[in-house]
Length: 259
Image 1 (cartoon, rainbow, N blue to C red):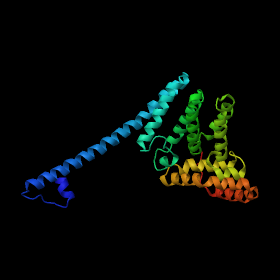
Image 2: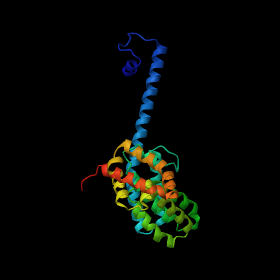
Image 3: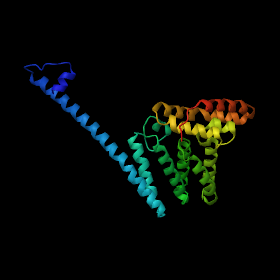
Image 4: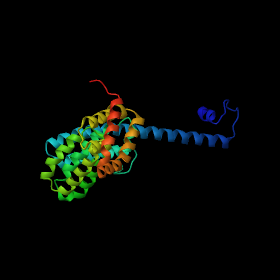
């Protein structure tokens, strides 16, 4: 009650209060306490759910080794749903920008690996063709933000040979190769995803941009607007030499962590 009076600008409680005023004030205080408790409980539940994701991932990985793919898929789907609830997005609404404003941006690597496993699980049954397509799109969306891009790109080549939905895998491979692991412009300019310049830019992204909120927003902005520039370069290869010169100059002044 005293806190409510202070909030209303009343430093000294009055000696007398009419019954109606007292009743109204008591009701407001009770409502405020109720809302505050509800907000606290909501945050506690979110934190509890966030911690539960670790066990879901561990269980799913164990089930994958036992080839219990259906059960593993259930755990993975629960994990994704936990992230959706924690970040307050609708089902299927996770995107890299959600994580760019969070210190939990490294969770994108875990999420990408989950999408990769789900993509392979859904490929085992014709009934899950649509799910596989949706999952492949999500994986392509998140993969450029993670260090596992090269590994997934290589695994896709062997996955394609045995896939029951090769058209989905081909479409996915085409999309991620166009992205070049996130360094769209540099990859297009140097015509390769593993040149020293591209690798240096990736290290700069991981070591200096991802750790800070501003850096994460910069990465999201770059990934949103650089693909059209990369496509333009591929359509006009005569522009690649000057772009390579600019990228090399940029790399020469970028800070690097000592190994």
